[in-house]
Length: 465
Image (tube, rainbow, N blue to C red):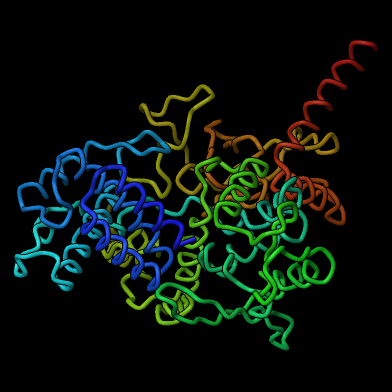
């Protein structure tokens, strides 16, 4: 693949009229980048395609560009749009292109293809700053793992144990999709503890050993033993671990990306079609950090040489809970604050109550008397139940209506948990509620359709009566 990409770039340079000497230097440098790292080589090849096209339009030798022309190219990048999305190029990609141009001219000086050995015009060109620490938080939660794996099992292209293995390995190990696809059959070895030892080759050809947890290892074992189809590879070449069932070739990262997007749509995740396979890497790092796994272990597992790279994937690096001001303020127990423990903006008055313009009563600061109607969840639960506020939504509870205060009728739409159901011998009603909420958590679309059919049936039955 790398050789074909280099040859394609050389053909493009010839069509653009780039001097043969410059084309030879660019392709030689790019070939070395592919040897060092296939993903980096791919990114630099895309960058060189844009750079050569601009040089041809400006009638500039790519190796003899000066500082003023380099600045014009940087401005041109700020106006370019993506061929795939139609949006402006991201700051990260523009920075990658500028870096690729810098590395190219350094190589040109090293091979004596550029006369002014002491200057590199791209070295002083301002490039976009990418603040990874302050990007948006993870858009996935570990609670989405089961939903995505079930969706992968039902996928019509890579479904069954193959889809489960791919999605489960990405979510529970945080490895790169390209690294997973490069695995050969003999690089997944039984570790003797109910799992598999994966002997990966990551960026820059560095070997890395990871272990599949038993949940994913069971899927991989079943796939290898029963469902795997041998790939059509030349004799003497190693068999890939993950094989496309239709085309009988190695699974590619594009196959993985399309699988992930189909799973997100089937599981009805809020993130929708914008989910990518690399999102799992941030989810894994963030969850590992929250569970106090050391930075050193996370760095080793990710295959990073620099711990700052690992920290860039940790999206909990700066949150409200870590702000020193929040921690210090919690030490003051008798601060004379007028604010409530839970903001009043969350409460909406629905009953008649005049309290000086505030939607509150004695129970609002702690929301200690919340009730919630359960009749919409199942016909056998036509009653209200007690609820208490919590930090995050339990599985399926978000499908219940907002809890309310029986004293002031203020509604509390925040996260809560059902704690007690009156008239509940042997916890039968609680078990029924937990079952219904669990089903809604795993199959929200199907359960919504079932509820609609049940409602229509009740209306027809009532009309007939």
